[in-house]
Image (cartoon, rainbow, N blue to C red):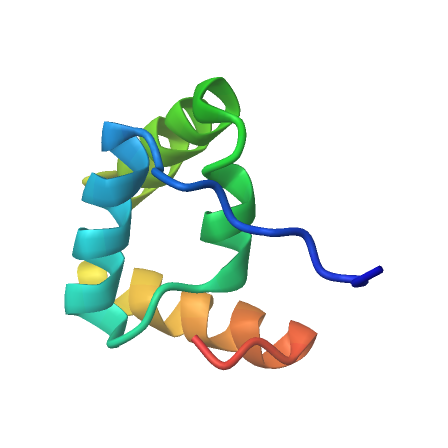
Length: 79
């Protein structure tokens, strides 16, 4: 018996699109995204939320990137 859960044979189209986009931006697909792909409705709402945050015009893009970098360093995330 393995402690790992086998990945699905085929991910939904939204997951494949998000994987492709994320891999192009960061160079790899993070595990949380793979986990979200198991629940397409949850993944869709999360992707919409993330895109809405990314497209917020009130903050300069440089400040958003700095905040993301700081938050990821606080939690130990490599992204």
